[in-house]
Every structure is written in structure tokens, then in C-alpha cells.
Length: 138
Image (cartoon, rainbow, N blue to C red; front, side, top):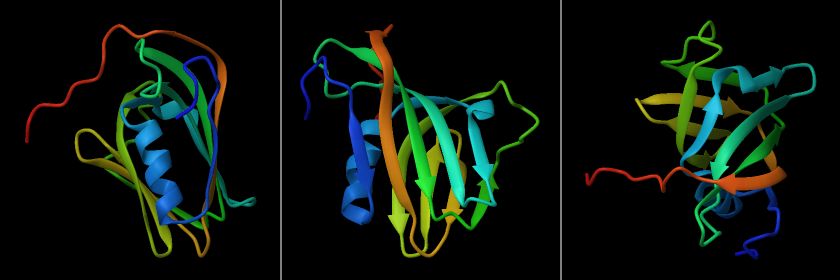
């Protein structure tokens, strides 16, 4: 993990890389209006408010997540008209030909393409979180 004050920058190209991205993005808050798909360029961009699990002091920071090689985007349970809705990102999974962003409430965004890559970059300065995300026992 990086130092508590360092900004995170990652690149993912395979399933192992995406496991690291998933760990860093767990419990990120994503406004629906801050996700966009540029089909002509094959790019899907997410601006998230991620919990800095690597920081010992409990912080959040803005984070840009840029997926490339995306041919198709499929959504489950997401109404694009609810642009102000905040989604709670649980995990990111990679499988052959797709990357799936899974959100609380059984919502999902599935990115499909032959070779999807990802770049993740923190933006700005972190701020104190109001609390550490908690999940009920399954």
C-alpha cells in the first residue's frame, strides 16, 4: 500500500490487476451522473468518492477511473434518468470479455469488450470520512 498522504495511481490489464482495483474502490460512492460512456472512443469513465482503505486515519478522496476497450455497456437496475442518485460500489470483477461494477441493491454495470483496460487516479486532497464503511454479516 502507499503512504497515507500519497495519491493512488493504478493500471489494470488482467484479472489479478482488477482485484487490486476492486480492493481500492470497495465502498466508493458514485453519483450516477458521474458515469459516462463514449462509445466512439470505447471509453467508460467513473468519477468516484472512494474510501482510502490504505490510510489509517479514515479518509475519502475523489478518484477518476477510466476504462478503455469498451464496446458495450449494459446496466442492471439502473435508471439513467436518476442522475443525482448515489451508488455504493461493492466490488469490480473481471471475466473473459467483460468487467462488472457491482453496486449495493443488486445494481450493476457490465462493460464488454475484447481487451478492457483500466486506469485509476486519485484527484485532489483527501478529507476526513464521517465513518468507516461497514457491512452487515452475511
